[in-house]
Length: 318
Image (tube, rainbow, N blue to C red; front, side, top):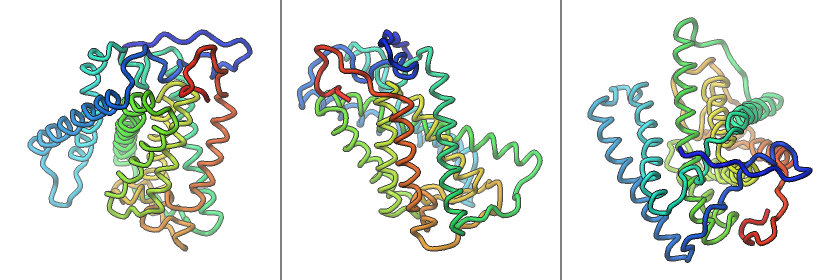
């Protein structure tokens, strides 16, 4: 994507805050409600159309296996979803006379650092969540289930797969849509609406329930906080991917209601649903909300809010 020029450092600000571009500060356009919802509707329509066509192509080339699980089919279906959310961007950025990086994924010098920090945060989040559940007797790791070359194959597969999940879901709900809607209604109202949609979207997962969907909604707001403070989605993409990878592969537990093959161990969850999350997995545990609260505090202090600049729009105030 087209590179955004990093903003000039603010005197006295921390390195994390001073080098981050300001999300949503692109050139002024027609931001009336009709224009905003019109652009958002066009984007959603193009994404859905592209996703349907790409999924049909994937199904023709790689039909699902009789068992219902095929690594190539699962991977390329997710790749199709990731591609679909980005395909409309060159057209829309040209029509809106904006740089593509303004929608959340700028190719800036700090992107690599944010990716590394997000991966560390997501891994720590998963480890803390599973550790708390284990301390209360709700989780046991079990014997290692895969070895040798199979271990390397599954490790690489789930790592690549969840990178695609992180990229596609974060950009779909907190990229172009967040940028566009925020210009009409403000950053946090847009974040609330899109995070709500993010949670409801997960209710289609088999095994998901309202507790899990509420957790996903809160996670959406948490990632919006990281977007607000860092100026991009790089932290959120890496944190999302690392957390899902930790749940599914490393800790071998259900992920948003899904129970996949290729677990590292024969892990087991046992105990009441409030502790383990039940069919949802640890995302439905009461401890997930506590861990997200701790992560929100960490983001707040590591990535301080920028000082409001003279003449800044009220919707961009922290």
